[in-house]
Length: 77
Image (tube, rainbow, N blue to C red; front, side):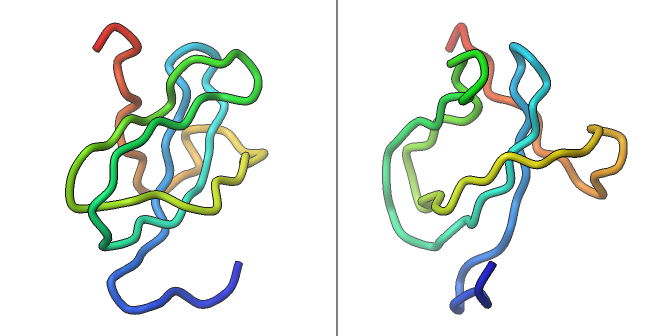
């Protein structure tokens, strides 16, 4: 992944439906959106606010190996 611009950072989310882990770049730009799992199509993360999320990548690792994991979005929301 290319170096981040100012106001961005890498974050990770896991799918509540199948536990696939995704890494994305969080950017300080107001936006609204949803990212769905490529394996089971469940919502992995929804956002509407001060940040946008770009460059989603599926990670091939176990949840326990991530240093910081943001809780998945509840698909019922």
